[in-house]
Length: 106
Image (cartoon, rainbow, N blue to C red):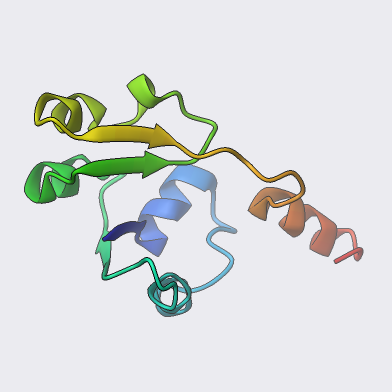
């Protein structure tokens, strides 16, 4: 199950020009992945309520977060789950892509 920030929460967190894709497109891209069984959208700034409700066995977030900094990590670990921080792949950044498009280099 993948938790997906709603467009409104993304705008609150990252600014008025984000997200680049609409909610339906972002859900469809994630749902198309073979490893994804369901996509659950949340409108809060963090997925804490969703994590408390689902109590996942594994909690994963992008590599700019240390596992102990990930929202909900204490809950998952206390329940015997695992928390992972994925490594970044150089050159893949929504912010960088948006900057290239603005400069006409996209």
